[in-house]
Image 1 (cartoon, helix red, strand yellow):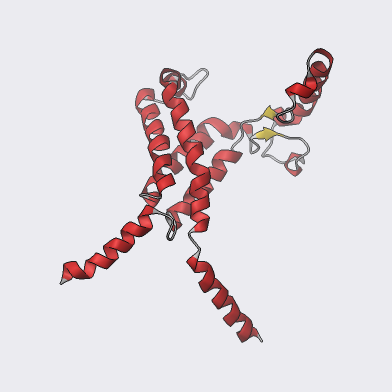
Image 2: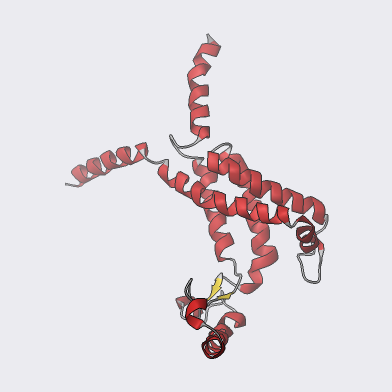
Length: 211
């Protein structure tokens, strides 16, 4: 019985291999617009971006802010486009992972894990991944809701979604890093990336070159 199950598992695995490119394709389609938008925003507000990179009082306090801001913009804009195409996927994942690590350790780490403050989360149960800002957010949301209900058009203000407090933790940056790390190992994906077809074309032409 175990042998039969193993054979069946192997057959299923072989069939899944044919569509294995779907997973990296989805990762690329999720990451690309996020990265392109981030790079575009930085480029459109370049002077502000440089100031934020370099200012040690209210920014990151990084050296050579003009150069680092330019590199970040290039990585996000060009990297996002290349990911969308599935071109040089493994190579472009490396600077993008570095960008995410900088974001995690230079920007988001002091605020714990959650991107959105939510005291109802299981993470709120005494974990070190949260901070006082998150724990205080419930009272602030209640106060804001009360003020808006009394003095504003609450239904209109919340028609697009409920009120939340941005915690700015590492959650999104960490997830993007993990997605990029996956692409580093898998590449752009079978059948669904330019990398795949370039590799396939190279492999086909190699014997002809040897002849």
